[in-house]
Every structure is written in structure tokens, then in C-alpha cells.
Length: 167
Image 1 (cartoon, helix red, strand yellow):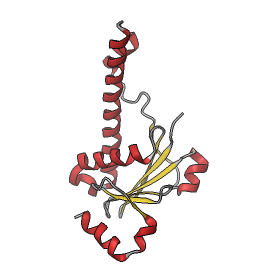
Image 2 (cartoon, rainbow, N blue to C red; image 1 turned 90 degrees about the vertical axis):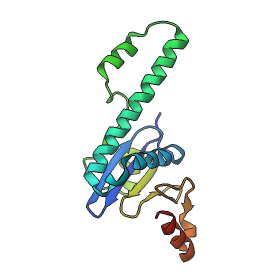
Image 3 (cartoon, rainbow, N blue to C red; image 1 turned 180 degrees about the vertical axis):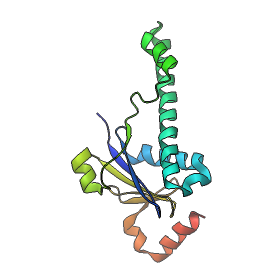
Image 4 (cartoon, helix red, strand yellow; image 1 turned 135 degrees about the vertical axis):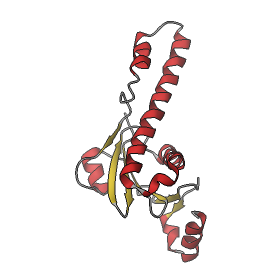
């Protein structure tokens, strides 16, 4: 069973959304997005390039994790696993990543929940350099490990300090 989420990448260029089937909760997804955005560096000013890089980065990361898991399982079992050998030879990074670009209209959380059973909904704002999650009502900068609840964002001093921390 997966923890499904929708990740929306947006900039002044537009919006692109990704469906993520597994590990969509904030404790995994936010650090993962921050790690990707750090890896992507200053290339995050182009929405389509960033989206292509995210898919590449995620699939490469997932393939490495699957390789490590299979290698560990093979050590524990103490026998050769033909599936593992075939997996390594094929470099099949599309197997079991649980990631896909959404081809349909741009959705809000209610639509994502209804159509994809999404449990979490993220907005990665490439211009503002923030990651926003609707269910937990929390916003993170690209580098800040601790998010801020939206309810606190009514305080203009807090908003100003959040924007300052992104610089």
C-alpha cells in the first residue's frame, strides 16, 4: 500500500504535476525534494528542465536504493537471485518507482484526492523557493529542515524572516 501524493512544480512559466505512489508523507517527501533541489542547483529557473531533472534524479535514486536492497537480501539469503542479476543487467530504472507525470488538467488537492487517492499535496514554487504541503498546512524553504505552519504566517515579521532565510 502506498502513501500517494501529488507534487506540483510551479514557476512563472506554468505548472507541471507529478504523481508519487510511495512514501508521500512529509517526513520523506520534503527532505527528498530539498535534496533534489540542492542537486539541481541553479538550474531550477527552467520549469520543464527541472521537471525532467526531477524524474531522472528520482529514478536514479530509486534504482540505487533497489540495487542496495536486493544486494542486501541476496547476502542474507546466501544464494544467487536471478531476478537481482537480471535487474542489474537491464538497469531497469522504470521498475517500481511509483512516479509519473500527470497528463491531465492541473489539479488542486480535492481533485487529486478524488482522482488519484492522494493523501498529500505539495507545491514546489521555483520562483519563491518554497515547498508547501496542504494537509499539514506547512511551508518549508528549499533549505530549511523545519517547516512553518500556515496559521503562523499571518504574522508579517514571520513572513519577512521566512523570506530572508531563503536568501
